[in-house]
Image 1: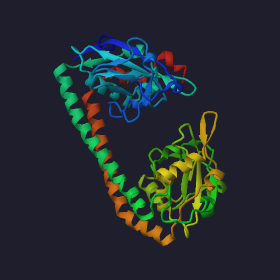
Image 2: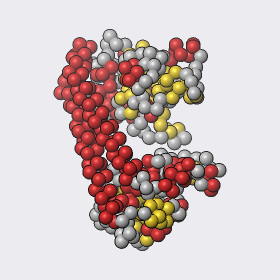
Image 3: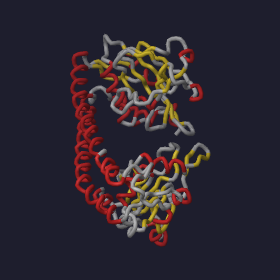
Image 4: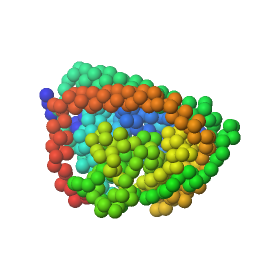
Length: 421
């Protein structure tokens, strides 16, 4: 297999253009941003910003099938994310993106897109990006310097077909998981009505009246030993994800103060994204144990707030379903404040949120009806995880003879970037 420089395969690359949100219009030119680059290597057009057409410099408003949008500037973990355009588009793109066109006589754009995803999955871009205060960047000029093993076009297309089929299964699993996740919110609305209008007239006490205690977490740093400690990345959606939990050593007195117990609520109190602030999950020791940690001695970090509920008046599952609803998220966002680019919510803000509160027995009945649905969600989540693992194994196998240069680059960061980390 012949090894070539990427520079030989790229026939053109073009940086995008900046356009502030103040210039957005209701009808205009689509201006693709990094959030439009989907995890599956395509474009996510669920939300598209529109800008005046005259904002686009000449030549920066046309995309053709096979163009690759490369995310050159973003947070460290998102640098290098890329998407292949599957049909011609009249659209501009952000200066955080670079449009890359490859020589289709030598390389299939979809194959090249998968190779970029493989490169990112090895951690190459995260390691070799130039680090700034709040973001990282990787230059297309540096991408051009890399080498890869280039199989024949027929072999490239065979690999694309295999990976596309595997990713199709992942996509179906994601859709099944999404549908399973929609059942409980539908049941909530059926039993309790829309909390925005409260048609059943439930009392609406403040959250602070049904909580025994709010408490902030530990600010101590993680280390090689200590107790498992939940952080912001472990509170995903309305569930705990104990993957990659950290160990934190704290004095016994602090352990007793911060130890979590079943039914405790954890709220995200600060983040750069307003939709993350107030995100919550119910603590379940069994979830922590299944991940191999001590569920009876689990702590939480300072960017989280623990709420210890009065379980005789509020059911954790009921409260979680309300807070995950559109109205619940709205009430949480209303309590968020900004400071130095961060959104924050404090215990006073949480305590003031109004909660529609049916009798505890009706809440318990809701949990009983949900219980079999939790099992269905677990099955769908497990199936998705297996499908994703299979795809990534095939991705690694498909490029095992093509990405040796990238693996070496990951192992030995470039001299130019070494000083910036």
